[in-house]
Length: 634
Image (cartoon, rainbow, N blue to C red; front, side, top):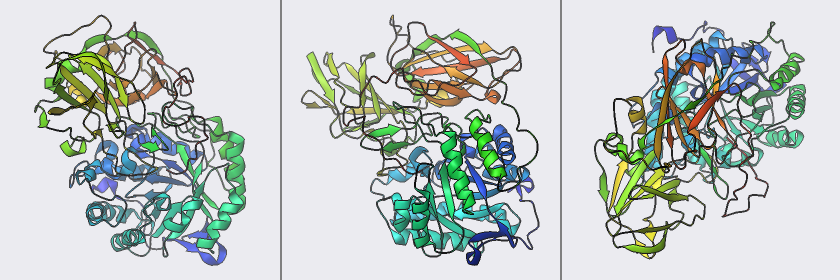
């Protein structure tokens, strides 16, 4: 660790402990209650960390709570990344400068609506691994990661002069079916061995998870939202933790969004009423989220609640600080409640950041994805009789192309299907380069093909984010079963793991080797353009009217997925630091996976559209979409 990243503060008299006799915390011997907010450094560009933390402090918070996603820091076994936006220690330093203490939640599993709940996908290279249990393969990986992470955290503990007052072990383990107490004991022992006896270790569970999630020797806390019965839940918590402060580690200020469902909101009166009631009880509270941020790139997670539900790119969460970092009316209402119980810093909150509009801009066709295959997969394909998963060929995120050739002529429209729900997660099907349609996990799509013997069948598979909550079984990606055409099982596959981001970053002067330009392009296609910003610019929101679904990059940075057709999210947040101001050229690149609008245009708006219900016409086919969803957990 560099000198600049050492914690600040003297270590002699510093302590943070539970005072069981008076049901409170003591900080340096004085009574202390935290009013905290969740912020995820991995969802906010590094240059904006200080801004978001300052606004949290100005709102009256004294603590920031954050997860550490293992898969963000260990991309390959034994390869660690704490640079740039992954510099956790720089974030801890920014929190110190904002005068915020820290509650750290290093997992190993974090949920957080994050890809695979923070667990690295490379764990699934051992297909039989049992995640979040005392399976020796899982524990060996966990141990080696924590032996890297926790010693680096140690100097940042409060009693060592740092700002971390407590550390959570695992995450809502009681909501996981395994209920493996020896796994929890192993983690607690590992944390103690690497962090010592003085740091407060705790667990967090929903009320129904306390039984399996709590552990003797770890302080038990609970999570619930404004609509839940506080008296009942705190009463239940007292069965597990009879004395000490009441703690709600995740008080929900809003909620997550799924593609294809309405944008979630929580009303201001509901949120403030519950907060005030908890603070009156003397409880310590963390608000989840205080600032949600964005699932850039491929980092969104997914739930499985009778069907596969990927999380949107926006993680705005209807939080007190919006996705673009602006104070909302909810923030001012919460600040008002906090001010009744403890001092709130004087002075106004910073105003909303400047916003920018631009466009519409015309995008031009660069070529079909198939035209760029040699650049997308320079090492060439992998050959296998049966299709292999992403994990089996070490492809973590994004896209993989599966190719085979029709074994006989199909002169009548014949159904292509994949048994046992074997499409993980979405497949874009082409015959001789012509787009035929889509197959999707948990959906009944009727897709009929025709073609001559030897015709090329290409199936582009998209990993839409691994399960982060729910059944939490190992979520392999790709074609999990060989596709069937009519009665014929298709074999002899070529698999091309695609490095789309590398191609986009190094984009020109690459030209596709051959150009196939149909009249109205459809199927996976690249579009791009460049544009100048003449002034100093501002935050903006990319609007893609008429586009269907795909991925978008600005100046080589992967902004994330759009799915205009399904919604509810219609705009993608573009932070100002991604754009070059004052006349420099900015490049936007789209990979549209299905259908391009007649006019391939995009525009930048000065406000987000997160709640479009324009496309609420399709219905999930494998279960009723009208039943209320029982949701819990992060």
